[in-house]
Length: 228
Image (cartoon, rainbow, N blue to C red; front, side):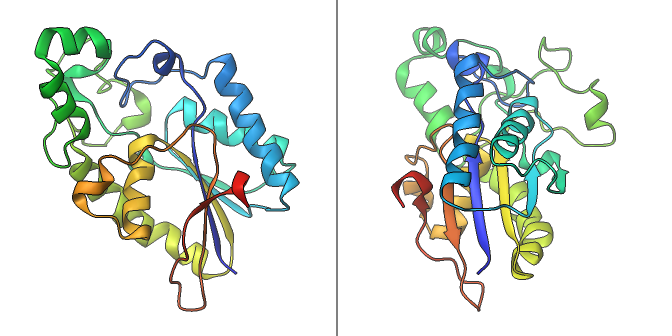
């Protein structure tokens, strides 16, 4: 049975500091490391053995994958890294403390930026402190200046359908280690969640979400591995 495992990276340093992170490359905290290891231990405990792995180009997701796979005894599994699994780009909000941003712009405006489906944050200006355009991992990639959830879905979903679904369809057990919004894009698609409802869905850090597919590659109901 083709099986898909989704894991949001463990707590990052900017999660802890309550800052908008987006494409900026921050590391895991000690708690985030523990969450990643616990996710891998849970996979082993439940007898779920990934055979292929996908992740983003961001350290927090890559490390989460590696720590989880090591804990599961599956560090040897082939993996692919792709920018299309990156977190949503938070534009000019990148690096800002969320509470301070609320105090400056108001709760309603920040809520729209964070939770609306198709309203992106202000664009990141060239030369911004957290501009990723000079980063060699993005050479040749047209880095967005900001993204709504809708725009994030428009890059995540075609990649999932073209590169990951065929792997699943061949009978593999696939693990994707990614981010709150890139995983929200996949859950929206796989669970048929509406534009309005998806904005309220939280993806917890370090908790494997499971989809099992039937012979027609129709996904069943998603569930958390810890609840199985």
